[in-house]
Image (cartoon, rainbow over all chains, first blue to last red; front, side, top):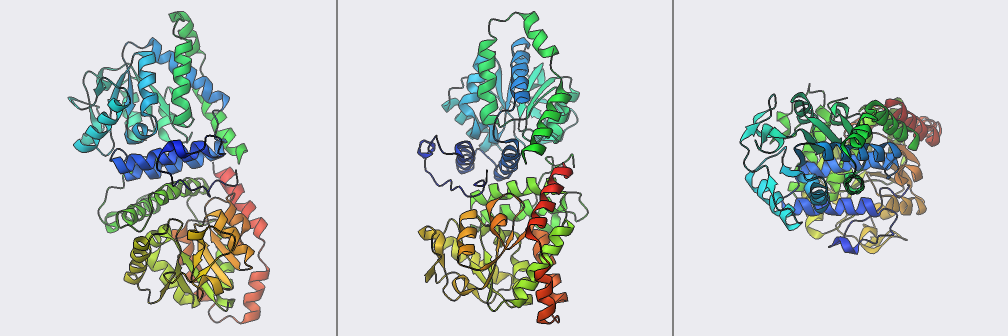
Length: 258
Length: 258
């Protein structure tokens, strides 16, 4: 992993990045985030956040560790069991995994809802358009006719028929305040975050410590595989999950990986 | 450190960031890098690199550890002993510590030279102007009349009377290829980098694992304190340094800090 810091990401289109490059995933991630900033989808601070994530991913070994794979299966089961599952989309999620989120939403019959830390009408629109270009037919978040309690005004805005009413919410790359406020609303919260110590995975019912680029397609695979499972089987999967053990396994891997 | 990911950096000027904020340094760093991108000084990839650095700084405890302080003192001694010391400036360095680099250059009588991974005439000029606004009187790097051997064309460009002729070079936040090529030229290389495992600190004569925002002013303080030291004293300081021990101490702190 010594070449961590030496890769140039100067390509115009992601097809130019060779798939057998030892740092393919990192290059792809940086390229998509950079394009996201250029398109007005991703806030500059999102580039910084992605950099932080990439350092943790590097320490994790840039692979889906077994405890993360298990958490992704549990998250898929939660989404399949839900009455009203919603996948929350921010600027980094939209830039990194737009098509992958559309696929997951389809596999578990969930809504997609745009929710931004730095909310502007232009960014909301750009992200909704970007998701539609990647196959989304129904994008929530633009109504903003309800509020998450105990959160400041802009970040609290949600759709009443979306996140507000949801029983299970996937919030990838989410800030801690919002993750905590959603948890306090009694929602079953599934969080994807590469730092096992940050507040979002700490408060989540299912913390997934993995790169979103690997996590989301893997959740979709699990969901498709579990599509015919009956409710009792799904409940068994959900009940078997130990969130503390998952967080500890990720921390242990980061520690040893170094 | 649980609030790591929850701080908003939405301020117009850095004076608005309260100095007693528990995440003051991180906010200041992000703010300066963001302004750097807006001004055309910092490449978007620099925002990503700074995010990576901030994750390692978080794991380090966001303080100058004793081994880093010692390395900063040794680096100051190297710069004072040098016949021709040069401080290399890239887009992140210019955004984060422009005035601080000018102060250090003055304290050790070194040249400042702009050197970019993504070199364009516009960015070179913007960075030189930015340094001059912060008090620099002589900025090298624009001549580009020499080349570092064994490095691709754009990144190899240096001033013959600057880095090319230097005996001691401070290269903060440098990519591994360039750090290695400079080392191969026989220069005494001082590297500031928050990841002790990345190639630049690994090849450096003096690896400084610290946030550049803390490291550079501290080097200046050491240089001012050592200004009247005679050559034998400076040589003693330099000889006492154990680079492997410094790298191990940083790695150990990151491991335990978690």
